[in-house]
Image (cartoon, rainbow, N blue to C red; front, side, top):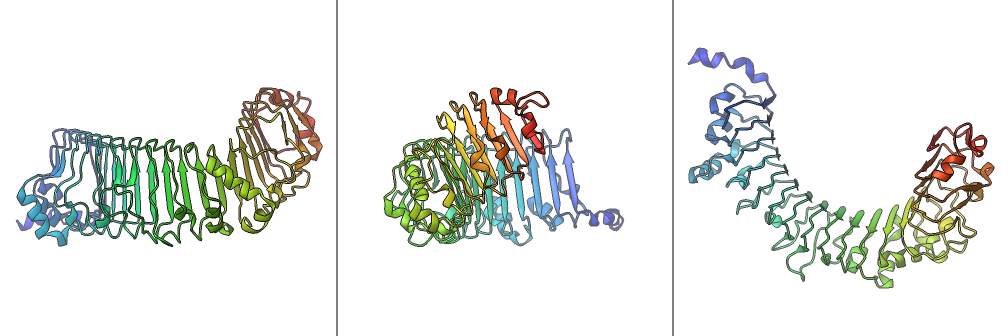
Length: 462
């Protein structure tokens, strides 16, 4: 026995192991890890006959007490991590002090229907990632360990519910994507107060964040909220007073049935990025909601096809507000938002920190329509999906000392550009994509505009 143990001594310095494409491997025998006392990362890849990870969970963990990261991917027959049975859960409870796994990733395991009981006893687990486990339906009744800080689950179409989130007192990052059967995020008490990032996307049957409509969110650590392509989502939950004081990013996109956004979401003091797009049923907010919104910190704003943001944009471009409330706004994207005629009376030029401006889906015949002024700070302008625009005047660029990028996309009728000589010498990029008439006139060496743009370092299109 002594000689046998000595033969494995040299393996103690091994810290990373990848096991892949082993035929006939249905579980990992405990002897397989003999001597791997220093192993920290274990990856199981393309073990197509693997059914369970191991039977003797306690024996393996005693040999792998240094294991920190466990990755299981492309194991289509896997049905569980550990062999089910009463002794399995008891073993985990009795030996929880040796279960040292910090991160667990399970990817592309098509037959995995449930996670094992006793998973909550992985007392050191901090990150859990589950991806493309199409048959996964439920989590263990006791849920996940309270030590979990990051939880990401995606493309699990059969998943019906998440574990009870309020038990995850250390959870900081939650991402749920493409879980078609999920209808609610939290079924009982709400969201964990330590939560910093909340991402939901492409959950087409998601109806609500909280099951109880009267429940409020109390997440003072929340910094980022992104909810995209959740077509069935009808409302956002209200929030406790001053509980979103650290919220810096709010993005709600392509939620076609979203009807309300409580004023509490605007009562924040640190908002830097706001993106609301393609939410056609979203109600117009009361005007005083904007007054409660601390706009001096706002740096990036994107608004698309929403009545609520039409009013917000009008508020931004008013002379009395733009010069005082939007002093840090650097990026503005407007798409199909009714902002009337853009003239010098509007406040684009008063946005003294604006560096990037994108305008999309407008039916104007010329750009600019009237005497439009742009802020001297501007470095980039994107003109996208202007189906009727035929004429561009470069006069608006002559007083932009730092202007670097001008890009046109899908402007099929654009053919006339005047005052090309007024393009600033700082211009580094000129793009013309899906603009056939303009492209013809800017063709290298042949187009009539080429002598006036040939000095630009990068030109895309002609």
